[in-house]
Image 1 (tube, rainbow, N blue to C red):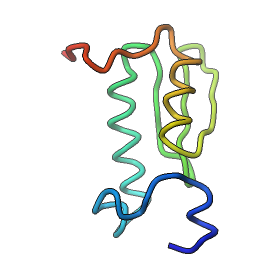
Image 2: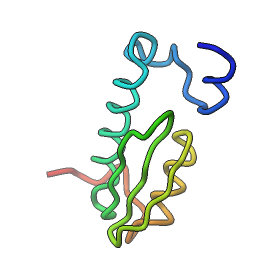
Image 3: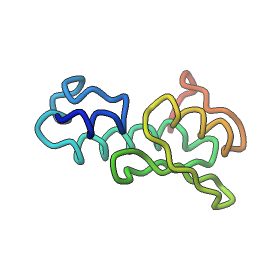
Image 4: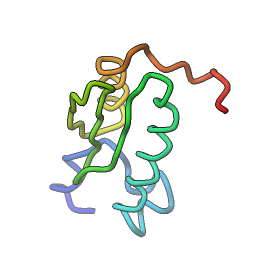
Length: 89
């Protein structure tokens, strides 16, 4: 990965095998997992460019570059902060 692409995200291209081979697919998989975890707060996460788009239950949207910013946006936009230990149906 070149330095320019690496500057847009804190995700390491080597952190997940899929990210190394197909970065867009890896980002989409991370976004899908994050969206499932945040679903209880009414927030939807999708891959967008080199980062993520976080959409709250009212339609308000934030674009974020990395996972740390993603969870901060989920907390701001959601009805309640997601509980990672909550059982999923």
